[in-house]
Image (cartoon, rainbow, N blue to C red; front, side, top):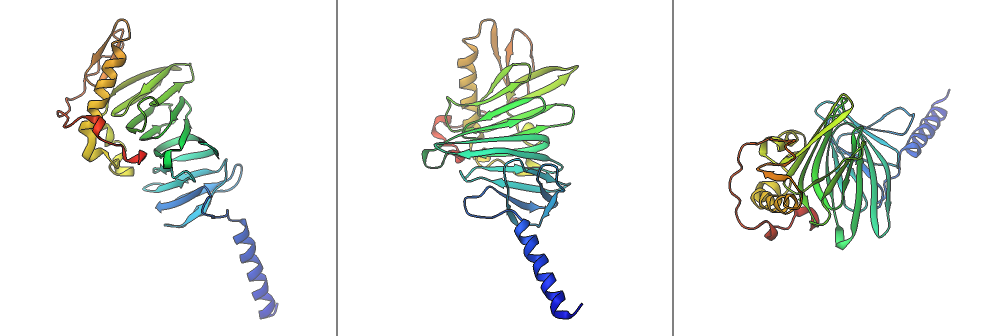
Length: 279
């Protein structure tokens, strides 16, 4: 093989490899490697590594896979961002943007932080499916984790519209509402889901902050958010026969009696704080 022919073959191989990569237009769904080992994977294909700080376009049905001490980020055309923590596998099942941005993710295992935005007044309808149930999100910021045993945690830091809180629907039909400043824990015991909604605490946030950092507005606004959550929970539980408000959780029919450590008294009214995700 002469040198010129070898160069030609190498050039063709490079062009073919480049053509095989997903496109990267400004309106694409994109995956960025923030740090560590991050790959994308088409269904039934071999995972393809993404270089640190690099971005690639991804299609519907693609998986994001991360290794230890790694962080990936899915960037969507509606300005929403989904961060994928270490040792996680998440599928972007679908994304469609018309008047409302509709997206579905499948969290196979691991942790994600969602920042679902309402740019210029647009609406969003996001669903995160897990083996235990689904989490419906419309304009908010929060964290979700799930393990191989079906145990799930959902923290909610912001809600753009108090009439559209996060809703968790389990496979058995149970539905839980999670307001700003609240956390839901679910365990799968002998095939039965046991779930509890409680007041968000720093300890619960710390389950995610090593992966994702402090939530964007939480450090300055946690007092206002917790005050808002307490007000909303009191309003909801006052309408449920036989229920009572337990600081840090809703006790319905005596099912839950969890009383976390008291949280410092909030500063000014939560209604004065505009969530960063909604701006």
